[in-house]
Length: 348
Image 1 (cartoon, rainbow, N blue to C red):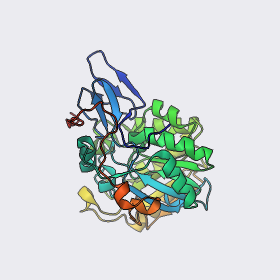
Image 2: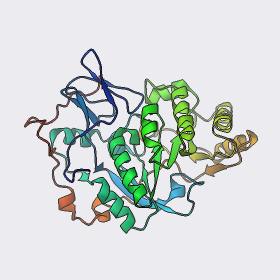
Image 3: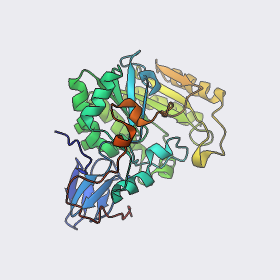
Image 4: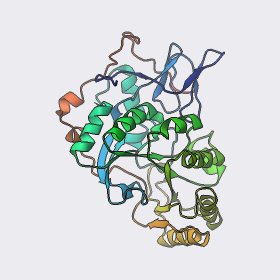
């Protein structure tokens, strides 16, 4: 059963290589790490040949709202979800609205040093909070949940036993092995199809290819997860009508004509702060292209971009703990790291 004290948890998917490194198989980076190294996501570290997740049970944000906000329209409509995020992401999107609660580079450095005051919430406590707040589901979002898959799985198992559904909001740069672990326990995948251009994906993840992302989405549906996809239309980046029509055609041919497509508005942020918001006409064009392609469930959002935490209440507000107790300094309860803590060597 889960530990009530914060500690590093072994990475669920890993394999040792003959050259002495250990490979993480959660996402398609498949980082090969030596002792003391952390992966690209910064959340998994090699300690003497074994990979551990630094961020297990560490929550960066919580919000409660309708499932339609994920966006998911065709699974349990009218119900509410508790959305939770953790630190670490395998993409570096130029227009990210969730930098502080997603990438969490400083937060993960603090965890590695044993100096973090981030909230630690064991899986059973999260499920209990969801039930206490009267929601019907839990959504893993704000960063790529494959990075914290160990926590996602433990929460999902307990959530289902408690009668709650789970939603996995993803960029789908994940391995088939991770999807196979998730599918028996996670109900819904809400995934981005950001573009059909490898160049677009290379800008946010140098190793990513479109076919990998599309393959993961299709695989999730084949494994029995309910799948809905979204495209955030960015001026000058992925708004070419031929590309948008191609995304719609792929959804039709690989997920089905009745599979939902959510077309969302871009709002300037971070490195893309100089771009304008998506014109309404562009969004309407995208939606029309989807309908022409034969999609029967196209949803246009002229007021919404990413799945962002909006209320930003303190995490402690959702739990029966005072803020001081929830945010006490986190040092791994295990003794394997010694006094020096976890080494801080970053991904290379």
